[in-house]
Image 1: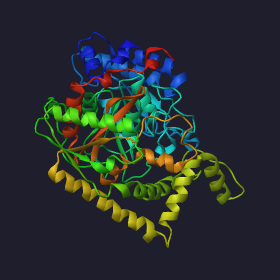
Image 2 (image 1 turned 135 degrees about the vertical axis):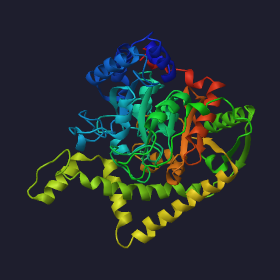
Image 3 (image 1 turned 60 degrees about the horizontal axis):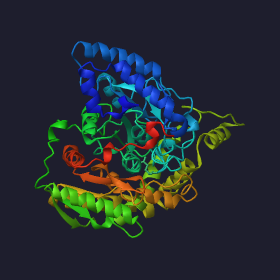
Image 4 (image 1 turned 90 degrees about the horizontal axis):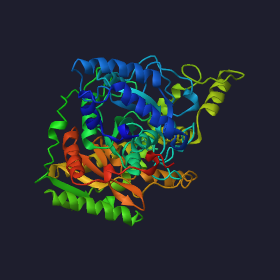
Length: 488
Ligand code: GLN
């Protein structure tokens, strides 16, 4: 699928020069989805009608010499982001037939920018998971090795971009769900600062942590997409009313003199030595490009994961109370209203979602609230202060995204704690609300390894500059998995 092998910025140039039409681009993407989906299952549905009608409109705009860098560019959207009159299932039986009557702000902004939506991507149910095995509609397979997971919860979005089905997909990141699957699939995943991108129309998992962001193949593409989706939204009271900088303007390849910190807590015992070696090589490359690099410490890192697994289930249990069989989605009758609630939740939610609801209810119940929830919020403050202190001295921090490469399907699904450990390096950025991007940094036994660049609040331009400089001097992001070339 050659046309889908190009980046967003390359495709935009072809579209603007009228060498390719938006309809051709949408058709190429839809074909790649049809070809790849039986093996990869990245998409819960493709949306050819929406895509082609948007593409025809985009062609009219392009014919007038108007439009922007996303006009006519095919995009996939994680199925937790509301899209008007297109089913939005959250990977859950409980919302299997739910069709939102409105667009999330990000979907509306992409539409206004002329992007063409080609489909909705598979995901862990309600974004709870690290492997995409918690989808009620079956797992996603990693395009680099179909017997392995693509990561989660935005596994479908990451696999779709890695397999060259689409040049960009939206994901969401509550504890790592953009960066971890990006690392496992050799793609670029950007988690913006909390509040940078509107959450209006994003089905809530843990509201104080959730952020929407792009999964692409280059940092430049992430910048182009962020440019469109970032910015204040009166419909989301937590969105930041700060101006949006010009993100591509900072991509000059110049990182000379930048001060980078490498947190020693992100190289723990038990991590895959090959991942450590590749990240150390990545850091050396940044030094070779002129950055100064220092080992440093984020002392409360160790507590971030356990704190996350108190705070996020607590918020999730409150958010998921609405799926009671009365207001939304699935409703299973019962002898009285209590039975109806119970039957609906029993049938609508998978095991992991039920586990989180129980954990959250426990952590918030009288008698345990102080011991767990309040304590967790206090520790969260300490984690955030670690970053504040670090950013007094460093422009950005560089670390592995995950302790291992993609693991085999089934390897961790019976052991929730083992699964939760996949996020040990991504969760702290969510707890602190800072921005972070994962970029391809190498391969171990044919599987991609991701390097994380963590930045100051609202300094997406800064981390994308570093990511772009790294990509200008490396070619890991250009390599494509065999499956995308039709070998599957
Ligand atoms: N894997 C983490 C979890 O299961 C993070 C999920 C996410 O970022 N949505 O909660």
